[in-house]
Structures are given as structure tokens and as C-alpha cells.
Amino acid sequence: MEMEIMLREALERKEFVLHYQPKINMLTGKMSGAEALIRWQKGENNLIYPNAFIQVAEETGLIVQIGELVIREACIRCKEWHDQGLTDLSISVNISASQFHKQDIEELIANILLETGLPPYALELELTESTVMKSPEEARVVLKNLKSLGLKISIDDFGTGFSSLSYLRHFPIDTLKIDKSFIMNLDSDHANAMIAKAVISLAHSLNLKVVAEGVENNEQMQFLDSEQCDYAQGYYVSRPLSWDKINEWIK
Ligand code: G
Ligand code: G
Ligand code: MN
Ligand code: NA
Image (cartoon, rainbow, N blue to C red):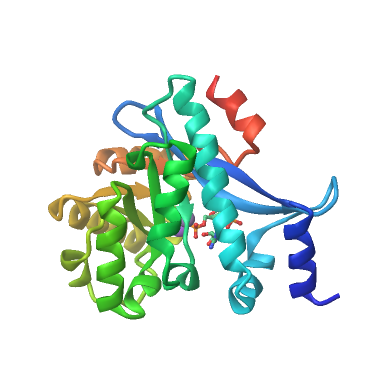
């Protein structure tokens, strides 16, 4: 069957679920939040990863509905944490280019925040460089409007795009997420270590926080710690977990 039809059915059957990958504060060693990552639960033992369907969802426009569901679910879950007293935890959501460039993204997110009662500071939107650089002038306005809601903006997969660095000065960004390709090969490739080090320094000199993604072992953790990286995310901390599993993990 055509993927588009399958995705429509999956939406109707509510087969999209979120997994949550914890992110830790390197200074305190405590969990600071989690990134919400979509999965398609197609039957009990068949979990489909986003690489298999996100692109089709983008091309067919279905990403708009799927994306709305992701933002809402992520906010509902993070609000559950806050209601349990875990008010330091934030939730990060990936926003794709077509979602970002849709007219009413600010209104949608404002409504979801109101509806769920999640304090805006606890929501972080992850955008890639290519998403914001597609039409920088438009992006600057949208980002400004989103920021005025009180939420956080991070640049995902940082270092893999082709953008000029000057946009960092003009956009209201809070965080850079160093792409996992640099972190995963830190040990074997000296150049990657130097890039990671430079990104951390760049971020700090612009007053941005920095997250290292794809941290898989203690050596990488030590290196990032010595470079004063703010947050770490990766299999070394935890794989992405179902809602039930991440709550066990938190305990
Ligand atoms: O979860 P995994 O590591 O397999 O994710 C693969 C890719 O899918 C990543 O680039 C991630 O940003 C993207 N992705 C995961 N969840 C979502 C989502 O809810 N919306 C969008 N647009 N992309 C997502
Ligand atoms: O593009 P984005 O950064 O949103 O994608 C996150 C993706 O990275 C998810 O698919 C997630 O499963 C994956 N991921 C998270 N931590 C690690 C890690 O330590 N190693 C590897 N190889 N992938 C990771
Ligand atoms: Mn991401
Ligand atoms: Na990333």
C-alpha cells in the first residue's frame, strides 16, 4: 500500500507514539529534560522509526497533523512531570521545515501551551539550520514571535548545515545541539574533538547553551565535561524510552 495511505490510517488509529530520550545537566549530573522522538507503533511488535516515514509525511503535508499531535502529547507529558513536582524538567520537540513555515505555527503552539497548562519555559523547539536558513528573514520573524511566547529555541544537528554563522547573532536562539556525528567519533578523529570544542566555545561566547548529542561512552563524557559542555544526550545516558520506561528511569 502507498505510504501516504498507511500514514493516514496510522493517524486515524492513533498509532504514533512518543519515546523520550533524557538529557542531563553536566554540572549537576541530573536530568534536565528529554527529547520527544516519534515512533509508529504498527502492531504490537513492530515499531517503525521516523527515518522510514518522516520524509513522506513532509512531502504529503501529513507532517502538519502528525506534528501537532507530537507537540500536544509532549506538552501533556511534560506537564505530568511538573504536576509531580518535577518542575525543572523540559521537553524538546523536533519541528520540521514545512511545519515551521506554516502560517499558524505560533498560534498552534500558543494554544497547546494554554490548553495543557505547561509553562512555556519548559518547551523547547528543535529546528535545523536548513529550516531556519531557507528564508532567513521570514524565519527571524517567526522565531521572534515564538520566543515571545516564552519558550526555548535550539538549533539541532549543529555543524552539519551549510549556513553562515552570522545568523546566530540575528536569531533569538537559546541552545546549540552539536550533531552526533562529531561526538560519536571524538575518540578516533582528532578533528571532531576540535570541532566539538570550537562549537562549545562559540556557543558560550554568544551566551548560548550547548548540548552534545550521541554521547556513547565515558571518554566522550569526560572530554565534554572538561570542555564545559552544558548538557549531554546519548546512549551512554539512556536510549530513547517509552513513557512508562522513562518514568522508571527517573526513579
Ligand atoms: O528517533 P530517531 O533517532 O530515529 O530520529 C531520527 C530522525 O527523526 C531525527 O532526525 C529526528 O530529529 C527526527 N524526528 C524524530 N521525531 C520527530 C518528530 O516528532 N518530528 C519531526 N519532524 N522529526 C522527528
Ligand atoms: O536529528 P536528531 O538529533 O533529532 O536525532 C536524534 C536521533 O539520534 C534519534 O534517532 C536518536 O535515536 C538518535 N540517537 C540518540 N542518541 C544516540 C547515540 O548515542 N548514538 C546514536 N548512534 N544515535 C543516537
Ligand atoms: Mn533532535
Ligand atoms: Na541532532
